[in-house]
Image (cartoon, rainbow, N blue to C red; front, top):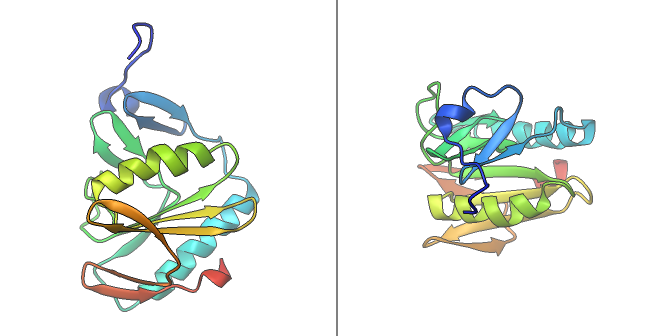
Length: 167
């Protein structure tokens, strides 16, 4: 870390106004609002995952919810599947994380966040491009993400199938 860089923790982060992510102590401003195309893709993903999980009562689908990774890393993915009791703060690793990427977020989503989610044990990391609507699915094998073409997911005693053509 350079001497002039500022370093923030969750204690400072929770006092900020607006939408932020904190990654290794560095703040990242989120867009003031999601563009309609981004909202449409996110809501379609939410609907497909919710429909797929109708028989899995243990898990819920959440949008734009912050996940506290550590005292200096708080992420706000577009959509997650969360399979634990929902409290004010989510601290357990979700089995599925979905990010809707754009030109401005692609590097952060494909490199920095991917590495964090991989290390934290996220089972499936899904990137959906708002530009060309392509979908990249990464499955975690022994701590490493491997890109796969899958539509069936298994986690926390749930087995679901997702129709990505509707997204």
